[in-house]
Amino acid sequence: MIPGQPGGPQNLPELARALTPVSRPNPLLIAWRWRYELVLAAGLPTASVFLARAVGWATAASIAGSLTASVAIVREASPGTELYYLDVEVWRATRRMRLRVVAVLVVILLAVLALMAGGYIGSSSS
Image (tube, rainbow, N blue to C red; front, top):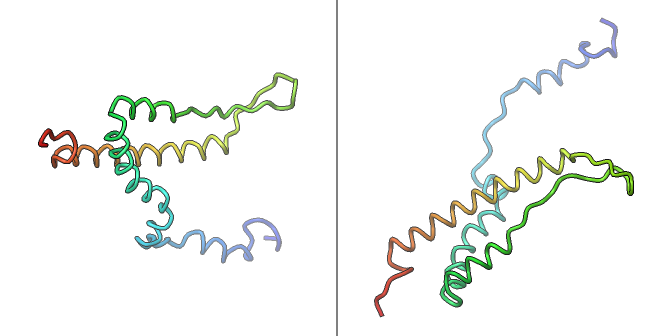
């Protein structure tokens, strides 16, 4: 092979690095990467319960529904041309974020169900 060509002997260290198995990340690193979601998962159930107790469940549900919005990832190619394209990078980032939001909402739902099962929500003992 001619030196400088792709696949030549100078690329062997890169190949070795690419083929080396990667160790699993530390749990603290995972917690750091998901820090905002973890804070939301801990804080939103509490805030939801306080909001629901303050204004009622129906009003709290309508407030939550009005805060949800869908995001369009279609961009105009240039102003006035009426040509549009799908921004794939933004689509992927939005999809990742939506999956995280779904995970957080599942945690919130489970927390509310656990509070209801424990008698902290909906108990009629005065």
